[in-house]
Image (tube, rainbow, N blue to C red; front, side, top):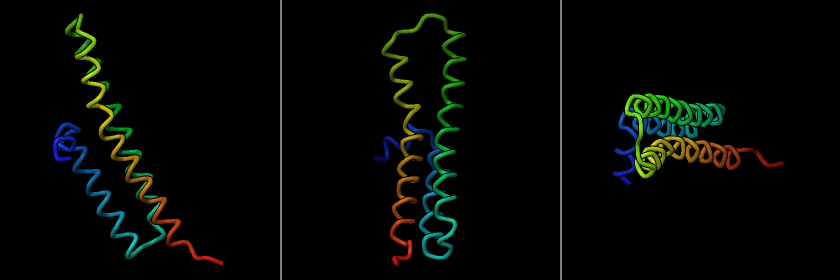
Length: 103
């Protein structure tokens, strides 16, 4: 697991982890913010993926011809933060459902 954290980019993955901690804190202290924090985590994951792809495609443009395996390896690394953001968003939805008052 720590390998995925490092491969996903320390900055973005750390930010997503802070958002996960904030999600659990909000579930305890401010339940109305749970969905918003989950949406922020999802947005952060998408943003990190787009910025990573933008930088990668710029490097590919400068390098010229590259192998397909190198491109696929880069794309695999690019989707790690978005998967983490989606998992945090799903956790926020589950917390919301559990906390919802039943009638």
